Image (cartoon, rainbow, N blue to C red):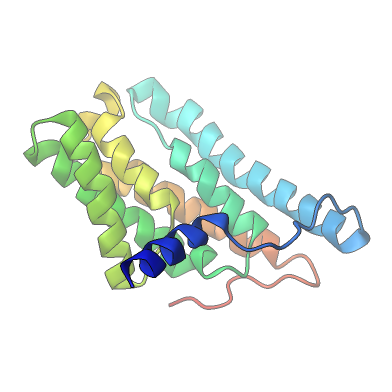
Length: 188
């Protein structure tokens, strides 16, 4: 039994034997790529512009690395449960809150980072707000440098909350311009 159990466990490492789709360049794929390009350029561009124009002169920011991953989801895979508004905004806010808490109360950076990511993952699972970039948002709250750390809990509202809402508003506007796209699939 133990041998079969170990072999069965190790067989899982092989994964499925399915061929990948490979590179496709048909009309519908090209249309999806163009809409994803437009949405992500606008979403990240607006956050970046507002950050450079209004926030960075005041030693703040409105753009985070985790927003790049959010852009891939909300503009590239619009039907995914991970891309929906509840997940985008809720996942980032919950993770930011946990990240700041870990940064302020754990004292050891590597441990605070590990706890921030792990606890935000658990919180997103329990609250049905799974958004993978939220893990990065939690980690940035711990290792983001002095300008992020100095924000304290304000980090949750700005840049995280405001940036997530900007990405969401642009996703709603751009994704619904395409006749064969609909966003969101659900709000809550």
